[in-house]
Amino acid sequence: MIKPHIHLPYSKIYNYIEVIQQNKLNLEIFFDAKSLDNIQKRDILNLEKALSYGPSLSIHAPFMDLSPGAVDPKIREVTLFRFNQIFDIAEFLYPKIIVFHSGYEKWKYAFKVDVWLEGSLITWEKILPRAEKTRIKIAVENIFEEEPNSLCMLMEKINSTYFGVCFDTGHFNLFSKKTLEEWIDSIGKYIVELHLHDNNKNFDEHLAIGDGSFDFKTLFRLLNSKDGYIYTIEAHSVEAVFKSIEVFNKLID
Image (cartoon, rainbow, N blue to C red; front, side):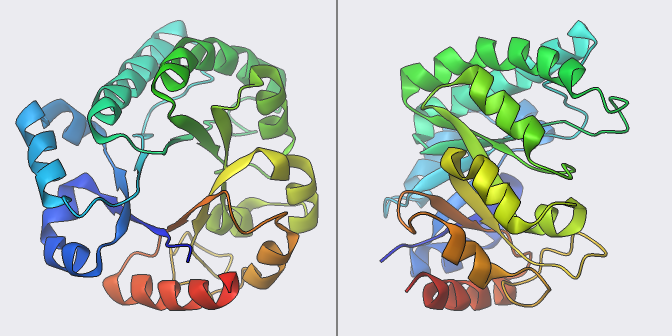
């Protein structure tokens, strides 16, 4: 049986540790900048002890203010610093995948995707060797993308088995101007992880699967196989998480 990961900020793990341990949940742990600046080796060792049941893990990297495709090299420098901090932690926790945001916004780059791509290649080509050495996959997540071409271009240029896409259902539902079929046809072969949450196309609500308007049945029909991905539930309440797990099990069956 495929068991999804549950997205949870590192800062809140111990608030829910009993639920996590009792249900032996697989986790995607989000480390924000504040966590990265304060975490010590003993904290990681304590986390390993708390998760001694051996869950499958993934990590979500920080993203606020960061820009892997930045034009300003100093911004890329700070972005790389944070990304390397994440890999420092990953070398202790052995996640299967680390999720990063793409940083592409059409208005910010004046529709010049080539400018974003140029900066992105500089950033990812510096961090990719760490992924390949540790055998931890990088997954670049769609956020504000209205169509999949920019991500497809990035995947083709990097061309590594340790570099793929995290397809986020909620962000697609909010921002995409292309159909789900067009997205999967374009980037389906690059998808290594899926973020599963829902909304009603007005706000990034992070609702339980099926509580919004995203077409999950079509998504699962379009995927080449239901195996081989990390599925991560990104609902933002305990109730919504367990409802999502129930719906997910029916979809994946």
